[in-house]
Image 1: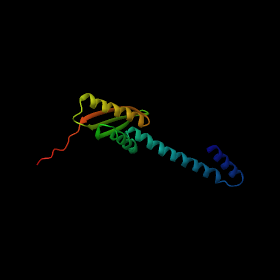
Image 2: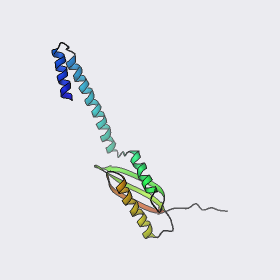
Image 3: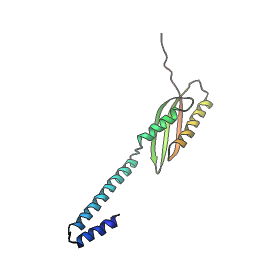
Length: 136
């Protein structure tokens, strides 16, 4: 595309429009500047572990829909290279045995790993939910 713009600028200059060549040069420089700004924004976002909030919301939705999960306390994601790493804390039924709570957490890890693209690692912690105690 840029080579066609350069040719157009050269043809314009040859046909008697001397401003055509520098104008095309400025347009190309502007396009390079726009690409640079977007690339720098994306790279800086990765440096500060910025993750698309929709991905985190999607993870919370997937985790909250799992059987045995009462609530999602916290869900965090960060970029590690070209893959995402996730860490989540779930509230589960406090009457579950340790083995059953582990099974809920393991199932949530598996489901999340298959639901979020580029998710390389998942750690899910299961905590007993604290039911509100009503006093009379």
